[in-house]
Length: 137
Image (tube, rainbow, N blue to C red; front, side, top):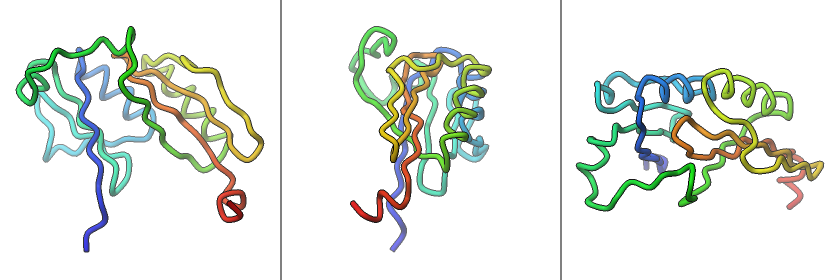
């Protein structure tokens, strides 16, 4: 059986800015599922973020698009291999137009987490967890 995949669909106001942000946090654009209204950003074999212009997003739902800077409808978390990588990804996210640490950083020793807000206000928790701590849990 094919592994389960996730496609996170996000409304964006500036597709190019959003592509730059998601590239900075490790994504690559799949041109097969991208055009001038949408970009499929591949974060792993099983994790994809669909960036959709407001017009395109609105073709899938009649509900109003939330202002993610003012409200929180979801928190997305993405794992990385080390504390240093978490910090490096945050630096790259900020350089690509993101905002660092809209939520306070969390350091529990076995887990280190920071957050990055994309240009539209969607928040991603960027974290590392010690594999040994996971194995013993």
